[in-house]
Length: 451
Image (cartoon, rainbow, N blue to C red):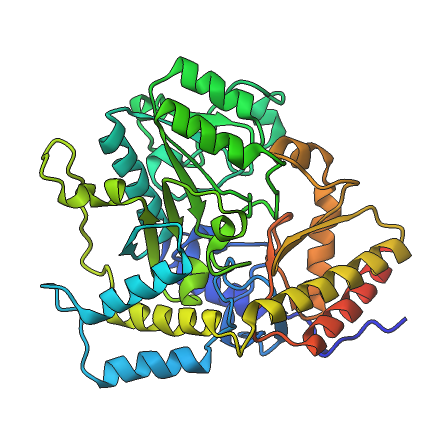
């Protein structure tokens, strides 16, 4: 059995450790987002297309994609050309008045996300979800918010609860009611915590219980839980949320920061035709440049200019629609919509090739595994069925094997984020050769683990 792939250079972690140690002298934890810290710690030096290179020079095929935004691949040449052109043309962040480029982006964005009436742009997904909840509270005059266990919706206080929560912290699975709140950060005031209510995914009865118990302004959820892999809604769940929102008057917020543009230009809502009142986007629509969006119904979006000052919602941000990420987003959306490129056909074909090959190899080695994917987003769960919620996943998935499997792939130049259950993402820059090299590495990794 061959134990080599295209990347024969051994994993050398010492240069990466040196980078982290040096950074830690000046930056708490050594990096600007602690979510990027992993085991093993690898400091990357450059990227192009489907490939990454670390500071020791080792090459990887990248499936992490920077937490999923790189749908076209790293440093897409058309994007780079567009960004370079706006800089050369003298565009700047004027800080006063409208710009033609933000209008062009909005029109292009809404031609993709056709279920929304209007859109506003921010710099990060957390800003967009914070604005969505603020708008919902202003519109309804209510304060309570329903969250979903396993759905990550940003870093702000009101949503910073219960993502990859250990089962010990939850105590037991709760169906039809709310989980104990488990903050993912210190520093949330107790009074603010009381306004957040966490329910299980695919549990309409729990949502109904919250509506009977609290004055709910909004429910926010990823329509597919893609921060814990790819956990799909059960038949009738999303339709049920839509009906409950209509019947009870709360604002239904679909957080499509990860799902949006990954499988369809219209996001998950484009695939299903089920509309959120508000929806948030980021990541893939600008292929890695820092920009995010809030889109939705006119009556909600227009609260930023409401004549009723008691309902008027502040919209502000010095760097909102900075010309560089705007140019990058326009270039990305044009490519995603180009029928001649057939971006989504290419992505789906590669993802199916990877899924089929992985399943053959798991069967070959007698590994219990279930592969779940939505378009180019995919995850192999080491359990005998596709998970339907976080508790199901947390109590059934073999996390230890997952961690070892990811490490063996990294050794062979295949990079998925080392944390178990994290989603993999394929880009337009990936090739059939990349997939076949990945499958060869998978074969070697499973042989090593199970010999």
